[in-house]
Amino acid sequence: MEKLISFDKSEIEKIEMNLLLEGIYRLYGVDFRNYSTPFVKRRIEHRIRTEKLSGISDLQRKILYDPLLMRRFFNDFSINVTEMFRDPSFFLAFRTKVVPLLRNFPAIRIWHVGCATGEEVLSMAILLHEEGLYKKTRLYATDISEGALDQARKAMMPLNKMKNYTKNYLEAGGTSAFSEYYVARESCAAFHSFLTENVVFAQHNLATDQSFNEFHVIICRNVMIYFNKSLQNRVLHLLHESLSASGFLGLGSKEGIQFTDIANYYEEVDSDEKLYRKIHS
Image (cartoon, rainbow, N blue to C red; front, side, top):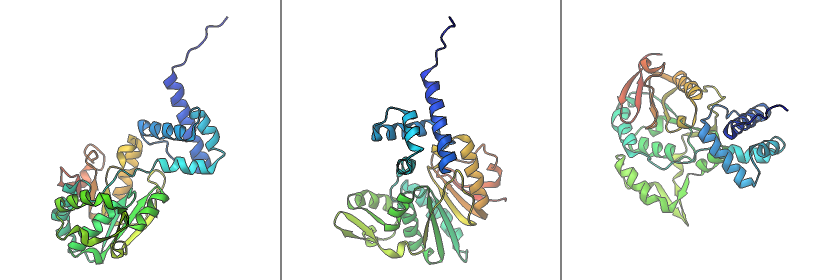
Protein backbone atom coordinates (compact mmCIF):
# COMPACT_ATOMS: atom_id res chain seq x y z
CA MET A 1 0.00 0.00 0.00
CA GLU A 2 1.39 3.37 -0.98
CA LYS A 3 2.29 5.76 1.80
CA LEU A 4 -0.35 8.43 2.29
CA ILE A 5 0.81 11.95 1.48
CA SER A 6 0.03 14.58 4.11
CA PHE A 7 -0.45 18.21 3.15
CA ASP A 8 0.11 21.27 5.26
CA LYS A 9 -3.20 23.05 5.89
CA SER A 10 -1.70 26.49 5.25
CA GLU A 11 -0.39 25.34 1.85
CA ILE A 12 -3.83 24.07 0.86
CA GLU A 13 -5.35 27.39 1.98
CA LYS A 14 -2.79 29.29 -0.11
CA ILE A 15 -3.72 27.23 -3.18
CA GLU A 16 -7.42 27.88 -2.54
CA MET A 17 -6.78 31.63 -2.28
CA ASN A 18 -4.77 31.66 -5.50
CA LEU A 19 -7.47 29.73 -7.34
CA LEU A 20 -10.15 32.11 -6.04
CA LEU A 21 -8.26 35.23 -7.11
CA GLU A 22 -7.31 33.74 -10.48
CA GLY A 23 -10.93 32.76 -11.13
CA ILE A 24 -12.15 36.24 -10.24
CA TYR A 25 -9.58 37.80 -12.56
CA ARG A 26 -10.46 35.55 -15.49
CA LEU A 27 -14.22 35.91 -15.11
CA TYR A 28 -14.69 39.47 -13.86
CA GLY A 29 -11.41 41.10 -14.95
CA VAL A 30 -10.80 42.31 -11.38
CA ASP A 31 -7.21 41.74 -10.29
CA PHE A 32 -6.54 41.18 -6.58
CA ARG A 33 -3.67 38.75 -7.22
CA ASN A 34 -0.94 41.18 -6.18
CA TYR A 35 -2.53 42.49 -3.00
CA SER A 36 -0.66 41.55 0.16
CA THR A 37 -1.49 38.03 1.36
CA PRO A 38 -2.47 38.98 4.96
CA PHE A 39 -4.81 41.70 3.66
CA VAL A 40 -6.46 39.38 1.12
CA LYS A 41 -6.83 36.65 3.72
CA ARG A 42 -8.64 39.01 6.11
CA ARG A 43 -11.02 40.13 3.35
CA ILE A 44 -11.77 36.53 2.37
CA GLU A 45 -12.36 35.43 5.96
CA HIS A 46 -14.69 38.38 6.52
CA ARG A 47 -16.76 37.50 3.45
CA ILE A 48 -16.90 33.79 4.40
CA ARG A 49 -18.21 34.68 7.87
CA THR A 50 -20.71 37.22 6.52
CA GLU A 51 -22.08 34.82 3.90
CA LYS A 52 -22.01 31.87 6.37
CA LEU A 53 -19.94 29.75 3.99
CA SER A 54 -17.87 26.71 4.82
CA GLY A 55 -14.54 27.92 3.45
CA ILE A 56 -12.55 29.44 0.59
CA SER A 57 -13.54 26.80 -1.97
CA ASP A 58 -17.19 27.33 -1.09
CA LEU A 59 -16.74 31.08 -1.61
CA GLN A 60 -15.07 30.44 -4.97
CA ARG A 61 -17.84 28.14 -6.13
CA LYS A 62 -20.55 30.67 -5.28
CA ILE A 63 -18.75 33.84 -6.38
CA LEU A 64 -18.17 32.55 -9.91
CA TYR A 65 -21.92 32.15 -10.41
CA ASP A 66 -23.20 35.10 -8.40
CA PRO A 67 -22.25 38.63 -9.61
CA LEU A 68 -23.99 40.17 -6.58
CA LEU A 69 -21.73 38.21 -4.24
CA MET A 70 -18.78 39.33 -6.33
CA ARG A 71 -19.88 42.94 -5.88
CA ARG A 72 -19.99 42.49 -2.09
CA PHE A 73 -16.55 40.88 -2.14
CA PHE A 74 -15.24 43.68 -4.36
CA ASN A 75 -16.45 46.29 -1.87
CA ASP A 76 -14.54 44.49 0.89
CA PHE A 77 -11.33 45.65 -0.80
CA SER A 78 -12.17 49.34 -0.53
CA ILE A 79 -10.17 50.75 2.38
CA ASN A 80 -12.18 53.42 4.16
CA VAL A 81 -9.89 54.05 7.12
CA THR A 82 -9.76 57.80 6.71
CA GLU A 83 -10.65 61.12 8.31
CA MET A 84 -10.47 64.80 7.47
CA PHE A 85 -6.98 66.29 7.74
CA ARG A 86 -5.70 62.86 8.72
CA ASP A 87 -2.11 63.21 9.95
CA PRO A 88 -2.38 67.01 10.31
CA SER A 89 1.39 67.42 10.08
CA PHE A 90 1.24 66.22 6.45
CA PHE A 91 -1.28 68.92 5.52
CA LEU A 92 0.71 71.53 7.44
CA ALA A 93 3.86 70.56 5.52
CA PHE A 94 1.93 70.71 2.25
CA ARG A 95 0.56 74.15 3.17
CA THR A 96 3.95 75.59 4.13
CA LYS A 97 6.32 73.85 1.70
CA VAL A 98 4.33 72.97 -1.43
CA VAL A 99 1.65 75.66 -1.68
CA PRO A 100 4.17 78.55 -2.05
CA LEU A 101 5.66 76.73 -5.07
CA LEU A 102 2.22 76.12 -6.59
CA ARG A 103 1.31 79.82 -6.59
CA ASN A 104 3.22 80.39 -9.83
CA PHE A 105 1.29 77.68 -11.69
CA PRO A 106 -1.37 79.11 -14.05
CA ALA A 107 -3.52 76.02 -13.42
CA ILE A 108 -3.14 73.07 -11.05
CA ARG A 109 -4.18 69.44 -11.40
CA ILE A 110 -4.14 67.23 -8.30
CA TRP A 111 -4.80 63.49 -8.22
CA HIS A 112 -6.00 61.94 -4.96
CA VAL A 113 -5.40 58.20 -5.38
CA GLY A 114 -7.60 55.88 -3.30
CA CYS A 115 -9.79 58.72 -2.06
CA ALA A 116 -12.22 56.36 -0.25
CA THR A 117 -15.23 58.35 0.99
CA GLY A 118 -13.65 61.72 0.21
CA GLU A 119 -12.38 63.06 3.52
CA GLU A 120 -8.87 63.73 2.26
CA VAL A 121 -9.83 65.43 -1.00
CA LEU A 122 -12.35 67.59 0.87
CA SER A 123 -9.58 68.56 3.29
CA MET A 124 -7.36 69.54 0.37
CA ALA A 125 -10.17 71.62 -1.16
CA ILE A 126 -10.48 73.56 2.12
CA LEU A 127 -6.72 74.07 2.34
CA LEU A 128 -6.51 75.32 -1.26
CA HIS A 129 -9.50 77.60 -0.71
CA GLU A 130 -7.80 79.21 2.27
CA GLU A 131 -4.59 79.65 0.27
CA GLY A 132 -6.41 81.24 -2.67
CA LEU A 133 -5.59 78.41 -5.09
CA TYR A 134 -8.84 76.47 -5.25
CA LYS A 135 -10.39 78.35 -8.17
CA LYS A 136 -7.51 77.45 -10.48
CA THR A 137 -7.26 73.84 -9.30
CA ARG A 138 -8.93 70.71 -10.63
CA LEU A 139 -8.89 67.79 -8.20
CA TYR A 140 -9.28 64.22 -9.44
CA ALA A 141 -10.45 61.81 -6.74
CA THR A 142 -10.29 58.13 -7.66
CA ASP A 143 -11.02 54.88 -5.88
CA ILE A 144 -11.62 51.25 -6.76
CA SER A 145 -15.05 51.31 -5.10
CA GLU A 146 -17.98 53.02 -6.81
CA GLY A 147 -19.87 52.82 -3.52
CA ALA A 148 -17.17 54.81 -1.74
CA LEU A 149 -17.18 57.36 -4.57
CA ASP A 150 -20.96 57.77 -4.30
CA GLN A 151 -20.51 58.61 -0.62
CA ALA A 152 -17.66 61.00 -1.41
CA ARG A 153 -19.78 62.90 -3.94
CA LYS A 154 -22.34 63.68 -1.21
CA ALA A 155 -19.71 65.49 0.92
CA MET A 156 -21.55 64.54 4.08
CA MET A 157 -19.86 63.31 7.26
CA PRO A 158 -21.17 62.12 10.64
CA LEU A 159 -21.70 65.14 12.86
CA ASN A 160 -20.14 63.37 15.85
CA LYS A 161 -16.78 63.35 14.05
CA MET A 162 -16.58 67.12 13.69
CA LYS A 163 -14.89 67.65 17.05
CA ASN A 164 -11.96 65.46 16.04
CA TYR A 165 -11.90 66.88 12.52
CA THR A 166 -11.82 70.41 13.92
CA LYS A 167 -8.79 69.46 16.03
CA ASN A 168 -7.05 68.03 12.96
CA TYR A 169 -7.93 71.09 10.89
CA LEU A 170 -6.42 73.50 13.41
CA GLU A 171 -3.26 71.39 13.75
CA ALA A 172 -3.00 71.40 9.95
CA GLY A 173 -2.78 75.20 9.95
CA GLY A 174 -6.43 76.02 9.31
CA THR A 175 -7.05 79.76 9.21
CA SER A 176 -10.83 79.94 9.71
CA ALA A 177 -13.46 78.36 11.93
CA PHE A 178 -13.90 74.80 10.66
CA SER A 179 -17.64 75.02 11.27
CA GLU A 180 -17.88 77.63 8.49
CA TYR A 181 -17.43 74.86 5.92
CA TYR A 182 -20.52 72.81 6.77
CA VAL A 183 -24.07 72.97 8.06
CA ALA A 184 -25.61 70.50 10.48
CA ARG A 185 -28.42 68.34 9.07
CA GLU A 186 -29.76 65.99 11.72
CA SER A 187 -26.84 63.66 12.49
CA CYS A 188 -24.71 64.75 9.52
CA ALA A 189 -22.44 67.62 8.60
CA ALA A 190 -23.16 68.68 5.02
CA PHE A 191 -20.16 70.47 3.53
CA HIS A 192 -20.76 73.44 1.25
CA SER A 193 -21.14 72.51 -2.41
CA PHE A 194 -18.38 74.83 -3.64
CA LEU A 195 -15.85 72.44 -2.08
CA THR A 196 -16.70 69.74 -4.64
CA GLU A 197 -17.34 71.99 -7.66
CA ASN A 198 -13.75 71.54 -8.84
CA VAL A 199 -13.54 67.83 -7.98
CA VAL A 200 -13.85 65.01 -10.52
CA PHE A 201 -14.74 61.66 -8.93
CA ALA A 202 -13.93 58.57 -10.99
CA GLN A 203 -13.39 54.85 -10.54
CA HIS A 204 -9.80 53.72 -11.07
CA ASN A 205 -8.09 50.40 -10.34
CA LEU A 206 -4.37 50.72 -9.62
CA ALA A 207 -3.81 47.04 -10.38
CA THR A 208 -5.05 47.21 -13.98
CA ASP A 209 -5.76 50.78 -15.13
CA GLN A 210 -3.33 53.17 -16.77
CA SER A 211 -2.51 56.86 -16.37
CA PHE A 212 -5.29 59.18 -17.52
CA ASN A 213 -3.74 62.65 -17.23
CA GLU A 214 -0.65 64.60 -16.23
CA PHE A 215 -0.74 66.04 -12.72
CA HIS A 216 1.16 68.69 -10.81
CA VAL A 217 0.46 66.95 -7.48
CA ILE A 218 -0.31 63.31 -6.71
CA ILE A 219 -1.42 62.26 -3.23
CA CYS A 220 -1.34 58.49 -2.64
CA ARG A 221 -1.25 57.93 1.10
CA ASN A 222 -1.61 54.59 2.89
CA VAL A 223 -2.78 52.81 -0.27
CA MET A 224 0.26 50.77 -1.29
CA ILE A 225 0.67 49.19 2.16
CA TYR A 226 -2.05 46.73 1.08
CA PHE A 227 -0.11 45.64 -2.04
CA ASN A 228 2.75 43.21 -2.52
CA LYS A 229 6.13 44.40 -3.83
CA SER A 230 5.24 43.72 -7.45
CA LEU A 231 2.08 45.84 -7.36
CA GLN A 232 3.78 48.54 -5.30
CA ASN A 233 6.41 48.82 -8.02
CA ARG A 234 3.73 49.02 -10.72
CA VAL A 235 1.88 51.77 -8.85
CA LEU A 236 5.03 53.82 -8.22
CA HIS A 237 5.84 53.76 -11.92
CA LEU A 238 2.25 54.68 -12.78
CA LEU A 239 2.43 57.68 -10.44
CA HIS A 240 5.84 58.65 -11.80
CA GLU A 241 4.54 58.59 -15.38
CA SER A 242 1.49 60.62 -14.35
CA LEU A 243 3.45 63.35 -12.59
CA SER A 244 4.52 66.43 -14.50
CA ALA A 245 8.07 67.77 -14.50
CA SER A 246 8.75 69.39 -11.11
CA GLY A 247 5.51 67.90 -9.78
CA PHE A 248 4.94 66.87 -6.16
CA LEU A 249 4.30 63.39 -4.78
CA GLY A 250 2.83 62.74 -1.33
CA LEU A 251 2.93 59.23 0.17
CA GLY A 252 1.84 57.69 3.47
CA SER A 253 3.91 57.50 6.64
CA LYS A 254 4.77 53.82 6.04
CA GLU A 255 5.51 54.31 2.35
CA GLY A 256 8.38 55.88 0.47
CA ILE A 257 10.52 55.83 -2.66
CA GLN A 258 13.85 55.16 -0.97
CA PHE A 259 15.54 52.04 -2.39
CA THR A 260 13.21 52.01 -5.42
CA ASP A 261 14.38 52.46 -9.00
CA ILE A 262 12.68 55.87 -9.24
CA ALA A 263 14.36 57.30 -6.13
CA ASN A 264 16.98 59.23 -8.12
CA TYR A 265 14.25 61.08 -10.00
CA TYR A 266 13.07 62.90 -6.85
CA GLU A 267 14.24 65.21 -4.13
CA GLU A 268 12.79 65.31 -0.64
CA VAL A 269 10.54 68.23 0.21
CA ASP A 270 9.82 66.86 3.67
CA SER A 271 11.33 63.50 4.63
CA ASP A 272 9.13 63.04 7.71
CA GLU A 273 5.91 63.61 5.78
CA LYS A 274 7.01 61.68 2.67
CA LEU A 275 6.66 64.67 0.36
CA TYR A 276 8.82 64.59 -2.77
CA ARG A 277 9.42 66.73 -5.85
CA LYS A 278 10.20 65.28 -9.26
CA ILE A 279 13.53 66.55 -10.59
CA HIS A 280 13.99 64.23 -13.61
CA SER A 281 11.54 62.54 -15.98
